[in-house]
Image 1 (tube, each protein chain N blue to C red):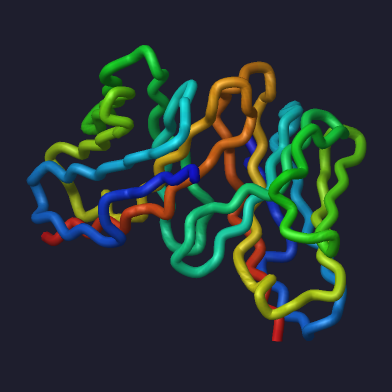
Image 2: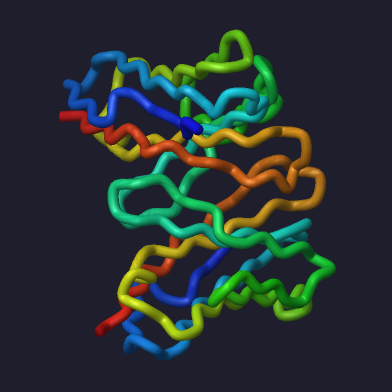
Length: 115
Length: 112
């Protein structure tokens, strides 16, 4: 079946512009996660959704970052007034959400470059 | 402060030998620990999960151990093959916390 998909795969933007990154989780998965991976760094947790609500937003780096999820499915991560330090690969993962030990299935990521 | 450290950034192993990767953590009380594989340009792929009350878990040529006294997990690939070359990430979740925290990974290269 279809895995987690993310769009766009690559995004180049100018400093100060807003960007929207999209994640389509595996159908039926209730849990959805956003991570950021900078060059040579591990995955940095950003936010977690259970259904449409976000019980844990603790990883969002600043108030320029926001995320929403509608219909318990698609999620968008929005970065306002982008800065060069926002350049990274943004990864989305989903899991069935019934058990906290559920495997997370990752998408291919969106590579964001802020010039 | 909380830390997850993987033994080295890069590890080169001769084909056919056993590759051993290390994951150490401090100031965590993990409910379980997971290992993922990540190939360039792709998202991580789940390999194995081991719970805090388990000592060892195996899957084909893979073996994971978990020592909560040493605060360490070892990840072994036996009879390594060039196709095993990738970055391997450990990740853990504290009790009562849904969030997975990842190590920075070890880039493994199997030399033919």
